[in-house]
Image 1 (cartoon, each protein chain N blue to C red):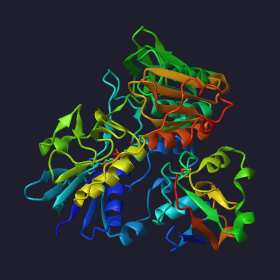
Image 2: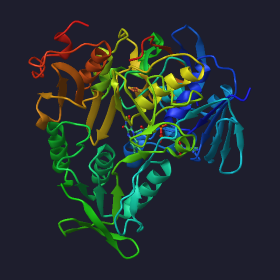
Image 3: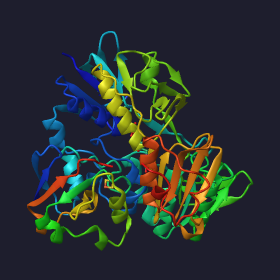
Image 4: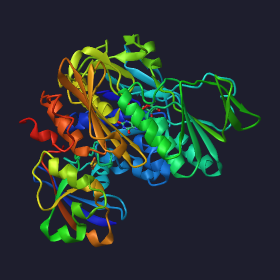
Length: 111
Length: 407
Ligand SMILES: Cc1cc2nc3c(=O)[nH]c(=O)nc-3n(C[C@H](O)[C@H](O)[C@H](O)COP(=O)(O)OP(=O)(O)OC[C@H]3O[C@@H](n4cnc5c(N)ncnc54)[C@H](O)[C@@H]3O)c2cc1C
Ligand code: FES
């Protein structure tokens, strides 16, 4: 398990335990973290799982441009909420032991 | 306080329960489901789950601890068989009696059975529930040839998975084109070619007259007398809303579905309904009644239903959307194309990256996007804002849609 801290759009922190190999989105939804809607269930069709990875974690989490599939970068480019350096679709971030303690902020507008 | 009983514990039912709590409801919430598993996502059943890339656990919508923390009582593996509306009590198969003052029906839909001789042979399968998907996944490795009956989204998704696993796959469709109910002929033609390119056979305009076999399936006979060899037959010919309880309660039904208004209210003020079991006003054009079978619809309608249960009015008017993954083809649809008069294709279908934009009375009403997520996201937002795009400018795929209007 890895500890993940979500700061929801209201500024409230939620600490949850995520299984290694699950996605950050999945962990948030199953535990009811507010603001992560994940309408499409993780299949890169909605952008309703947008988070901002804390600066200190960006290198370990990786960037959308690094993925083979260009879809995530395309979606983020067009997302309603502002795209920031740490922007990721959390359904594309797989939890590893390295990510224990990960801090992400939930984007205020999910779409 | 007796509280709320929600009949049907899947996409719409779970969302109704969650939304009740989000809206501040403090009373008892009981979510009853006939299936043994806690509410889960069905879309992966014909996609990642069938392909072996997702586990049953990963499909579940929420953790057990979440339902506990939200005080949502899950009653699973039990079916509501009787509802006494005046007495405020729902009775289950196992004899549980669940008191309520308000009721939500989120009973979904069941698959239509193939009405031909031999349809009860071993190896004739359907795909709706996790149990169906497990049965299919268990039999698939040993099968050489698979016949998929029905060229709709679910059939085609499953066909793509079977083909990727190296099976001989034939899709048999009664109508002259694939996915005819949902997309334009141009898009149907694209899917036919795309599946044929991947080695799947597509038989159009043919019906199945018999499933042939001794103990298990050995073939499928078509109406032209020909026989296709098959070790497995997967039937995906559509679903029918589950309306027995609604019927029993005397709720208004039309086209075999529970009639609701934009706030998910049925003809009885004590009952709301949401998801695949309903006939509802088109979210963007409420004068027209539609049936929608999608996760987005189940979720958004359930939010309206939860509000109505608490006496609030939160009409459901978000843009309908849908997706379908077939091999590496990602289809995303925004809006409803029903009743379109003109379709404009943007990009080259043969490149497997294009969109089809649907117009009625000169206004954009829907878009189908194949591997063009940016088009889809933009149009979904545009339709939500009541916008349109000039039909004569959208066909140039190199011009981003968002450069054509200000939103
Ligand atoms: C294989 C497959 C792939 C799909 N792919 C997509 C997709 O890519 N995108 C998309 O948007 N949609 C897709 N869908 C459709 C989507 O899954 C449905 O629209 C959605 O599940 C509808 O949710 P629902 O809650 O209304 O009904 P259901 O999911 O049908 O759930 C109803 C539940 O109620 C239970 N129930 C019924 N009657 C009773 C009773 N009397 N007592 C207790 N329990 C009862 C049933 O057992 C069932 O579990 C797919 C569906 C399938 C089957
Ligand atoms: S959950 Fe839909 S894109 Fe991540």
